[in-house]
Length: 180
Image (cartoon, rainbow, N blue to C red):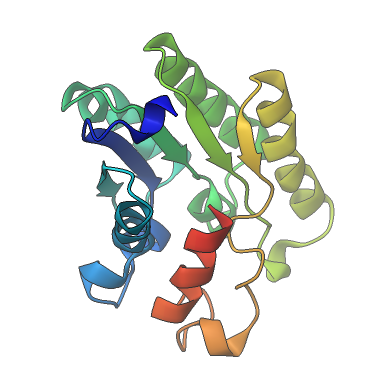
């Protein structure tokens, strides 16, 4: 497998406080746990955790070119849009921003692992339905490796979430890493 060459490849994790490992030691964030898991499996990857809490698709888009200038990664794990939904941003604006983010990453010939999100329960209805359709639509359109829901086995499970019921615990991130 060409990805298991020991060449020290870079994976860039783009997201918000969920990537950061909010309220946890950095070593318990999903990027840190994923890097350890890959090393145990003899894959030599460095995971760059490029998070900003409360990041939105617009904010990520505004800094994306700068982030990609650091060192072109071999893979980007992209999951953005949760804070857009929490802030009630227009769905067409969210989709346009994520589309542009995908196109900029792909223009550099960087593969993307794209992870979708679900709408917050308080925004369910037409907004939530329309919001959730963004992710599979873009994954199909751009032929991306796709995880339909980043927090599939973690969301709404008290034992895997911190007291805010949004951010995973260390054990919740272990499940996220297994999903990835």
